[in-house]
Image (cartoon, rainbow over all chains, first blue to last red; front, side, top):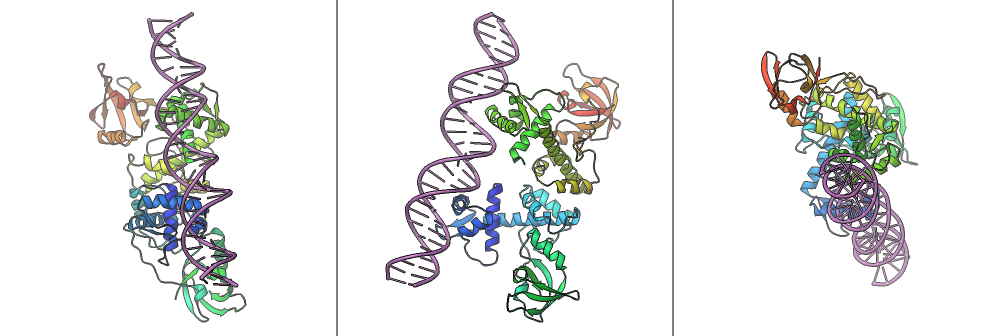
Length: 217
Length: 217
DNA sequence: TTATTTTTTTAGATTTGTCTAAATATTTAG
DNA sequence: CTAAATATTTAGACAAATCTAAAAAAATAA
């Protein structure tokens, strides 16, 4: 089994290579881990020794099959705990990330499977992210970022790509929660902000915010 | 906030001084922590620096008020999680200790209070131990150990003082679970084992087992 | 009460994950 | 294509928690 810290490295490497299939760079890991590149190099060697990642000097890293399986298992636990916190303990979607960061490291396969069952095998977490099943499989629902839509496009909010409390609270206040339908009316040339209509109300959203809202058309 | 390891030391010191009000010895801590006396001395100094324990060389340690509060909070979390595992996830009473050992270190006051509420503010864990409320208060129900009863005494099983899976499975097999009423018929001079009647069935229990069954007369 | 045993502490080393500063590779720009 | 900028690695150090071996204090026994 991996240490707490090793697990966090695996998870971060997984998320960094989730979309593009590229090797992950030392500096990118350092930024996400809030640490220095030198520390990352040290840890990278350790994970490579354990065959959890493939690593060649200066070439970045890729998860091995074993490493990927471990990473997905952590993601699975994180998202199941988030569902638990929201569905059973009535936390809000912006309050659960940090607690789930801790809970995801609890080490008991039995616990995870029973939790999954207790929650009726949810397919998505409170932020719309898919929850891998116990074999690591999940459906990656296709989405477009709000920032990429054209004027006139209509769609459904099905996720976010930023999980900070500040961001989620902001969306909440704008009424931009999961499942809401929206129509994009205008894209502002000046600053890239977009005008949308949600439940009859006109709202303006900055380019930065629009980038992190995932839409199913 | 304390580290994982510091929390375990506090918890163990708490349990070692729970009944007798004595100072706790280095060796006793070492045994419970599965470590060496030298390591304990090191940690003791650290906890004393943080004012979580009172310590004079060669004199053993006592929790300060702050240390005791921290320890009781860990115990509270441990026992609440055990209730969750048994009541909600259908674990058996002999399966929950190790998982709760991990969960007790999750750091969120809000989480604990909501869990407590979700579980309807339970007063006891699955082994009969009292659960401290959020101010650290709890009723210590008076008990007698089965090994101390006299022939003819009758009582109710209201707890155990040993939480290993092996021990609890053994009790389960004998039908000696919480809430059962028993009558002591004979104490064997030879080996101290006791004969009891539970639900009409005669059972023999070794001295070692009898020592860890808590009875309310 | 002296000697022996037990308990506790100290000294110095080890491991894990981190750091800074300096060196080396790689990439980008002129 | 060389020079500058950026990215990565190495070397050496540090804090946390542990260890072994040896020294010191306390408890027990003769």
